[in-house]
Every structure is written in C-alpha cells, then in structure tokens.
Image (cartoon, rainbow, N blue to C red; front, side, top):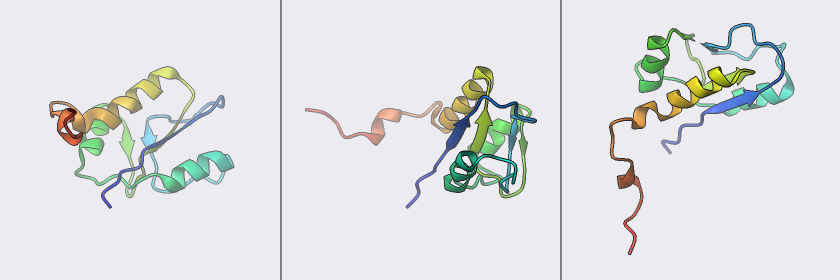
Length: 100
C-alpha cells in the first residue's frame, strides 16, 4: 500500500548505541520495544532515510527497520528530522485536497 511505518520507543534505560538502526530485534529489549520494532518498515539502502542517517553518522545495518529506542531528547529530535527529511523542499500541501 506504500505506507511507511516509523516507530520510536521512549525509555528511561541507557541505550548502548542510540544512533543505530537494526535489522534484528535484540533479545534483551523489552516487549514494548520488540513490538515497536516489529511494526516498523524496512529501510531501503538507497532511500532518503538511509542517506540522511548515514550523513548524520548513524549506523544503518542491512535490512534495518525505521525503529529507534531513545532516552535523550537530542536523539529523538534527530530521528524526527529523519522522518520529515524526504518532505524537505517539497510542496507538502499537494497531498491534501483543496478546501472550499
């Protein structure tokens, strides 16, 4: 259907490497984190998302999903920029019908 699911799990635990997208769930993650990982879309290597993250110094593993665990607002803010990065420079209003 062309829908991209981006998910983020906010936690109070320390995250070993918050600037990494994973292709497999870590068995040590909480059930909530695993659920959010499972519903996230896979990142294509040539996607705007992957290019943006790599440019920012993130690690994007093979078959990574658009999922991140965060415990710092800076990481959350950067990940939100990832979500909107494909929209930068585009007319976002064309996606909505014109009002009366």
